[in-house]
Length: 169
Image 1 (cartoon, rainbow, N blue to C red):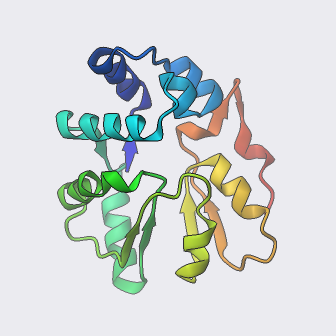
Image 2 (tube, rainbow, N blue to C red):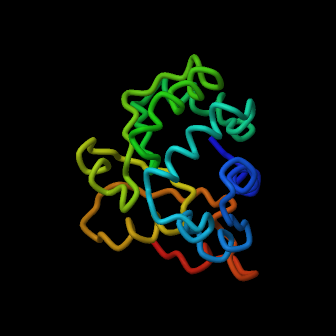
Image 3 (cartoon, one colour):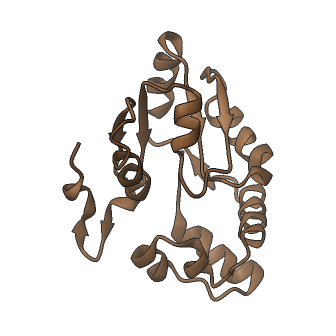
């Protein structure tokens, strides 16, 4: 599922009067710095409001539905997200709307610091993530047997260069 961070930050400016900046987000990849907010709950609540009020706030990237549907027929899919637990209803609504026939075993939320624990707990063989930060943290765990598959997205570029080029397995 992808979203438009620029659109979300503009929404926060308009709806909440925050001093939100897409440019800051591109440079830092920090929602705290980009929104000017320090309270995780405020950011999470703003995200929930955004999802409830914007019809197409998030939708799968092209080809994701078919790929996940096929994968779900032969493997267990676990969805692990950094989204706050308060966003479970909004996240499930998005999954029902855009991926209604995709079978997944579990939706695990609230992993804002690091996603390694659910990967270990679920004994995941293959893990895909679009976050450079997450992939870098996971690759630091040399004893982790999970095959990490980077899926670069807007997280990939910072300061005019592709950070993913520095990733080594």
